[in-house]
Image (cartoon, rainbow, N blue to C red; front, side, top):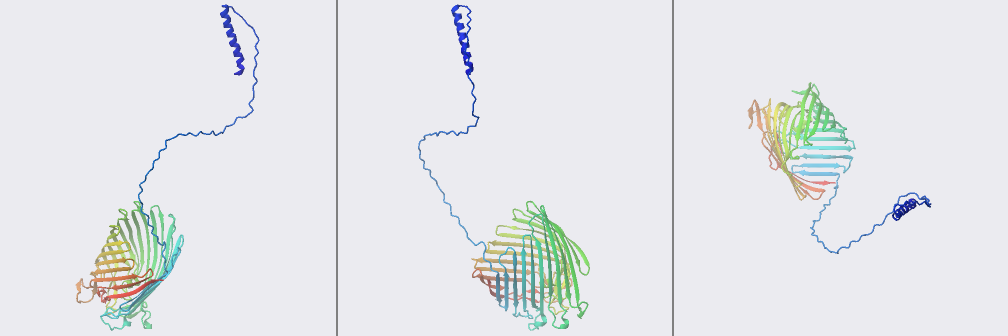
Length: 574
């Protein structure tokens, strides 16, 4: 702009003079020639380079004067009740030993002793000893003394992905066949003794991975025999039984289904006397080998957000006795949870083959003969329909109905061939069994507990007029009351009716039906009462009253029970 300023001044001056001249001379043309000095200012180079200015400019403080108004707020606070904290020991002290020792009114000593290791995440081992015996007399029958002793030891180990356990058992049971009216009978001539030695071991995996296969394997052995005759020449003429079993299973989860299969092989060798020999009329020795194999695959599925559970499978069983037979049974069950487990209806359709043994028969009736026939029980089909649930948080119930067709059902009848009627033989029959069951339970914390169970049975036998010695009606009532955790009162009542025994001649009360005499065994009313006083957490005392109705009911034909009995004792932890 500076370099153009002289030229602009020169031009303006010339124009002004020209106008002035024209105004003065009235149209004369005047030409003026002159020399101008035009100077151009030199340019200067800026020596500095461009840069970014990073300057923080101070912001002035603005003051806005306000009127000072004081306002005092008020608060209305509601009082909060202070929280209560219940302090308790997370883990109560455990004692490895427990003992219960008592004595009964009919010279009946009793002892029950347990010993176990205390808390351990990996190991569990221990054992227990149980004994009860009676040396008191019983009216109007032969000597009825008995004794039962059991010793058991166990050990188990639980690792992260697998575990195993083993157990050993010894049992010794002595009794007398007192079922005839002679108080002065020779006790040695009617004495019996059972001895059991058994062991089992199991190995199983418990992998947490849902896609892994978990499996189980087990092995078991049991030896069982009855009393050896006094005469050395007859030492082999008793019953002995050896049982051996191998079992296994595997399971795998795929989605909502669990696929599982169980397999097992069992062999039971039952021997009486010397095979193909005789010591009396119809009293011959024998050896019976019963081999039993089963395969039970099934799948368990869950649906409806876990409310529905169903199991579908089959049971394939093969029995080798006198001849080999194969059986196929359904294995179906389902249950559905309604209203968050308030009601759970369920159905089942099953069947199965049960291996029979002399050990199992003596567990039901210890007065059985030493030489009996064994047949596997074949439950061809069983249908079950039921519902269980809760009426309130303290009351629950259970209703069930079942129908079963059973072949070779074992029944006990009085023996008249080998004994004087004080032992029992075993016969088998095919029958339809219908069962109805109803149960109600009530529990108020640990203070009050009450259970009431009722069952009704209907038997339709093929070859027998009745299901001998089996009840038609059963009622069980159990209850307990905890008073300040110092006094524990407990009671139970067992009621049974409809039992009949088969007799072989007319006698008082017996009825003849289809050529068979049936004698009612009477109604069983067995009530027991117990009281326990806890001195502290380690020591307590108890008093039990058994059969307080003093009813000498007959559990088996010609075998009455003891009347009123009392037992007192102490329990302690150590």
